[in-house]
Length: 86
Image 1 (spheres, rainbow, N blue to C red):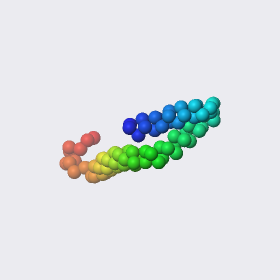
Image 2 (image 1 turned 30 degrees about the vertical axis):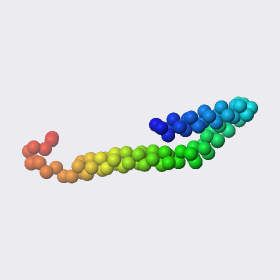
Image 3 (image 1 turned 135 degrees about the horizontal axis):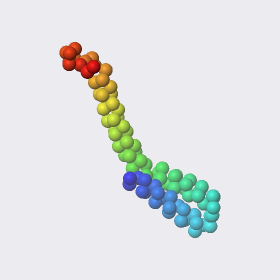
Image 4 (image 1 turned 180 degrees about the horizontal axis):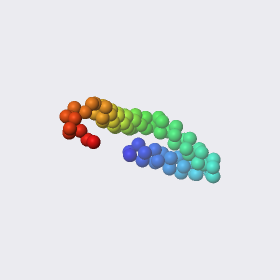
C-alpha cells in the first residue's frame, strides 16, 4: 500500500510541476506518466522489491496449500470398503 501511495504521489507531483511548466492536455498526461515512472524506478526500487517478495511469498504459500490438497485428494481411500462414501 505504501508503494502505491508513493507512486501516486510522484505522479501528482509530476503532473503539478508539468502544469506549472505550461503543458496541457494529452501531452501533460503522457509526460507525467513518463516522468513519474522514471522517478519511481530509481526512487522506489527498494519498496518495489520488498512488495514483490511479499506477493511472491504469499503466492507460493497458496501454491503449497493447493499442492497439499491435491496430494490428499489423490491418495487412495484407506477406509474399510463398507465405510466409504457411496
